[in-house]
Amino acid sequence: MNAWRLLLTRPAEDCAVTAQALAEQGIYSSSLPLLAIEPLAETPEQRSLILDLDRYHAVIVVSKPAARLGLDLVDRYWPQPPLGPQWFSLGEATGHILSDYGLDASWSEQGVDSEALLAHPQLIKALAQPEPRVLFIKGEGGRSLLGDNLNAQGVQTDSLTLYRRRQPQYAPNTLLQRLTDEALNGLVVTSGQGLLSLRALAADAWPIPVTLFVPSSRVAEMARQMGMGNIVDCCGAGTPALLNALRNTPVPTAA
Image 1 (cartoon, one colour):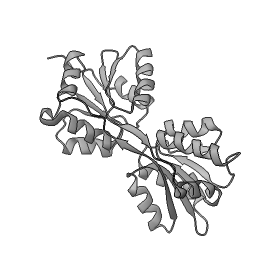
Image 2 (cartoon, rainbow, N blue to C red):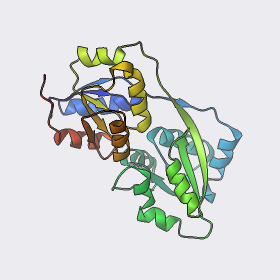
Image 3 (cartoon, helix red, strand yellow):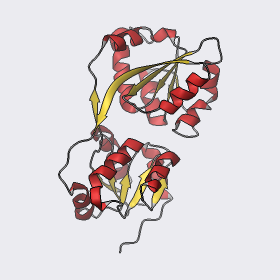
Image 4 (tube, rainbow, N blue to C red):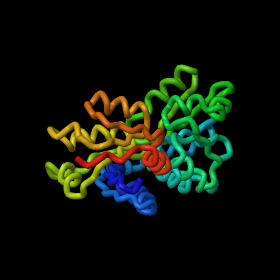
């Protein structure tokens, strides 16, 4: 497993955490963040939603940045978290941020996509009451499938949007130069947006002839449609899922 040499593309803070975990396993990695998190200025609408937190039956936090920024708001406006809503996350890593804060958070062990959370018994139970209400804590865009499904079931949903993602600017040929100079044999993306940013950065060099590690079947299918060949579905966006995929994937033979 330690013959893998990976390029990590998450936001810088997450790259650092993953790189440390990989290094502990003897795996070399290089970081080239393709997404940067830009918190949004607080608005009256945001303040109103967080002050109404106790009116929701469930709060769904869709990412680690959403968890961190959302908990900052809870700290600001609630002496202690309200007892009303049940907290859910898309993915274990996000859930642990909520749990470490002291919330009784739940997430699906069956996957990190919207379908897995919709089938979670705890979420179904939380919404099995008259006029259920859900608050999403999220970034701009994304996760419309989850909201659309809940709306179709008669659930009222609101969104507390706390950040936007932007693509850092790199010089042309940065990606290929990094792959060549550091003899990297694997690329790691953890979202569909990250994949699109990778494709844009590669430009005419796409598809790149290295193994691509992705977080879900949805992103794997996106990559296939975009022409990538050697794709590994990690079945999760967190570091444990990546490590498990590395254990079970043969290292490519050097040409």
